[in-house]
Length: 555
Image (cartoon, rainbow, N blue to C red):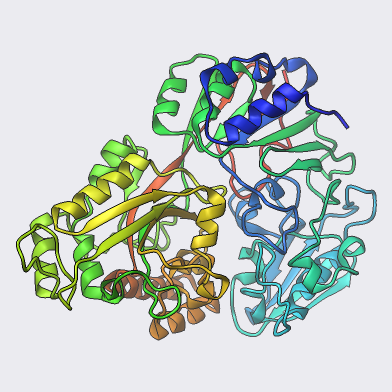
């Protein structure tokens, strides 16, 4: 194992603490690296806390760079980005799915990787349903697997999944395939708790995590058994940062070959550098303002948050176009509803019910709803005549793009103009996760939340922010609505795209009217890579698989 020098460790810890002082970035410890070692170095704002896919939602990065999903997003979009399964089909009954594995597929320890491992992975998850330690706390979750009637390996290369009703779940889920010989003796309790899946991992991806330092980096080594042949790169290092500040300097110095999640100003600066190639991609992230809609345990400071009329009025005080033009410098689309422009099959601009920025209209609606400034001091009271001030918390979840704090302050400024006082608290990822947890897990107690959520493009994922089953994970407003949940359940078992589109539109309109969220914008992924060490980057770097890191070639 290659140990880092004390000075480099110290420098990186300081960077991760948010300092990123110029002297650190210029220091020898974080200086330009040579291309000669053929190791790909990447960086992003991520905070993986474990390497177990069953116990965390925060470790998509780096796990997606080493594990395969069965099919997933990329395999459906790109013919050269297949996962664990080489091909798949669904029978005329729309419930019987057949998957063919890659012939001769192996795990990174040389053991055969077969359809039996895929069947084990899904059955392991499904077997936990209804138990005290149900596997619903991480990436490999029971959510969506409940609709699987049977999962079995017909032979080493053939997997069959039969669903209870028609659904695209078998190809749209993002469950990471794990080896039976590693996980078969791990209890459900340990899988979602103490079992950290320490390196070296056993996977089928092109690179294997051989070292992991939480809050610092993951080091990968080439998988000699990778189905596409051992990668040409000698390894990969994924550096974890607490903010985007160090990314551009790392690229300029040569300490990083690739970084994603750049700020608009970093991206614009790097675009002028002939040694860099910048990219911009529409993704499935939504930046939003959420209201704490809880009553009882975990509730916010005022009952106004539970009132749809109050929330709707606040929506008129948010200028999404200004956020895009000023804070995002045009690298986003103005927010509307739950669906995103990157999913055109479901997106709607809700033009017939869409709010428009109008502070006077916001004030009139607050007056009509009973939130008036009775004493003329410029601050509104609640319906009981009491003064209130809202606490707005904000931060960046692991793997999501940063939302500028200046934009958050702008939102607070708009609310002040309509007589609603707001204090802003910026949190690191750990504190943000703790405070937005389910109330049963100690979360809540805040009033407003600004953050992003980057899920998948499936119909189920587009409406996840409103599902009551997702409270404590995707649903950070804690909002519940029986009709919305009914629509969500129907969407989960709908295979016909036209019908799914109609159901998603109904759900989007319902939650837009109830306004537990105000969607601020749909940011675009800004990234950049150096041109001097590797080629084979392509034009579409994925967030759903390890491409292009399986095909980079040293120059």
